Image 1 (tube, rainbow, N blue to C red):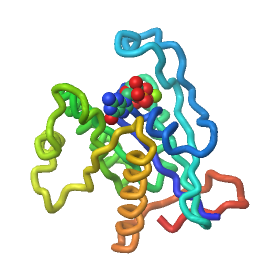
Image 2: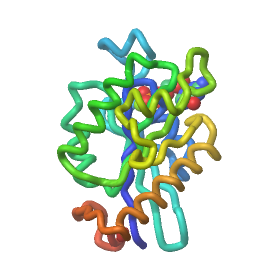
Image 3: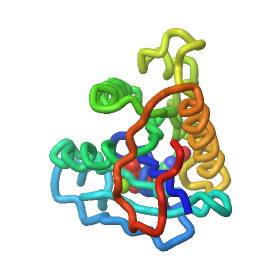
Length: 198
Ligand SMILES: Nc1nc2c(ncn2[C@@H]2O[C@H](COP(=O)(O)OP(=O)(O)O)[C@@H](O)[C@H]2O)c(=O)[nH]1
Ligand SMILES: [Mg+2]
């Protein structure tokens, strides 16, 4: 069995935990706790270490999906996750333009550590004040449509929508690998299961 490890990242409230819960076929191991810090103003619970879910993608490939915590003081967890990941999806809440800069910083943060395939998932497009895809792409610094990563619309609360986004991510990952982008999976899972090719 091959394993592809995927990371779901983005700021607090973009829908990471919800996304993983929507796609996972196992009970999600999440670490949501009552928020006691600045996040408490936004929502009652927050992810303090990471979420983990699993999805059997094909008979010979399983996806292990990890969500990063949104708070800066848990940045070290990102580092751990990114060094083990084959690819990631950055979720961006389309109705919160004030966070686009944070999203951009996230891309740079990861990019400086490893160049792994990534896509952008736009959530909360159904919410009032949501920006359109093109404007968000430009705000994220992707001025040239030819060179930007895939940008998908996703409603994290909707299983079909979240799975669709995962399919784009996996396909993008496989394509990037076959065109020569090198990624460096490191041993992480039990010996019975080997790493995916990408
Ligand atoms: N309307 C709407 N709500 C969403 C969407 N995606 C996630 N949510 C909601 O956003 C809230 C925050 O999601 P959560 O998964 O806790 O965010 P996290 O902090 O990134 O883990 C939850 O109430 C979700 O149900 C979306 O596309 N549209
Ligand atoms: Mg969460």
